[in-house]
Image 1 (tube, rainbow, N blue to C red):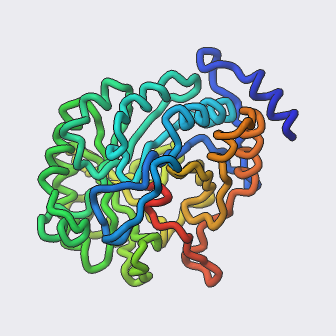
Image 2 (image 1 turned 60 degrees about the vertical axis):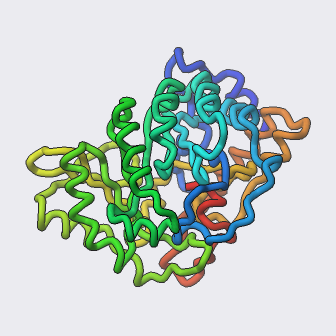
Amino acid sequence: MLVNIERHVSAAPRASDGPLPNLLIDGLGRVINSLRISVTDRCNFRCTYCMPEEVDFMQRDLLLSFEEITRFVRIVAPLGINKLRLTGGEPLVRKNLPELIRQLNTIDGINDIGMTTNGFFLKEHAQSLKEAGLHRINVSLDTLVTEKFVEITRRDALQNVLDGIRAADEAGFTPIKINAVAIRGFTEDEIPGFAELARNHGHQIRFIEFMPLDADNLWENQKVLPGREIIERINAIYPIEPVHNSQKEPATLYRFKDRKGGDIGIIPSVTEPFCDHCNRIRITSDGKLRTCLFSNSETDLRSMLRSDAGDDAIAHQVVEAVRNKEPGHKINQPDFIKPQRAMFSIGG
């Protein structure tokens, strides 16, 4: 198997020669082309569905360096990875992040680099991120009401986030995707405001069903606000229709029938899982490869990156991990086991 990987990697064409062959195909035939990279587990917020109020973050020497991250991406790009997303914690807590983006932009085969952020630092960094070559930004924002923002993030920073979104818009990021975790008893009253935000500013508003990855173990199935209910509520105010998108994306998109503004996206991770066409893997900030957000096993790549392991040996480990990728997350099944890591430690 290793010999085959070596042959294909060494013979893989460069980006200028056309699409790279994809060697990352799992046991169910799913083709993996998207890599999520957590650059830190630290965050300046304490969102209740993500992390506890008091956190012991990783020691900094455990985090992958920019050079280690770049080396890893250089290894997996010839295998078929062409999309990257930087996550945290909060990725902009990591100093000099534009430098990492510049490094990743030099890698043949990588044609899309996005980032998910809480938006707090965007006012300061949006322009430098754009100049470094970041293509897309997702902002996590669950409420437009100050008091509710404080309740869910444990921080009084809504205006900072709104200013950050505005700065990203002015820097040329379009469309900006705004991710709102949908929680029963919390989100219903927010739906009209988010719909208006999409209509008036052209942002893509994406509602993500509440998943069991909170550190405080507060998740219950009855707290999940189903995506189909959100669509019904928006359609009752502003008629919408499906957008037929051939790309494999987790969000099901809808547009306003009068074509005003941006789209509405639904990510029904709990009620309508999209595991059967999952195209992603992720690497945590401490260098562990996870083939599913809900994985209960990891492949330690940091030790290989910091040893004398060659690129082909690391490529072999990635291919084998993908071959054994989980069929799905099993949230609605009796044998579901919650991952030991909370969301902030995995990477969004």
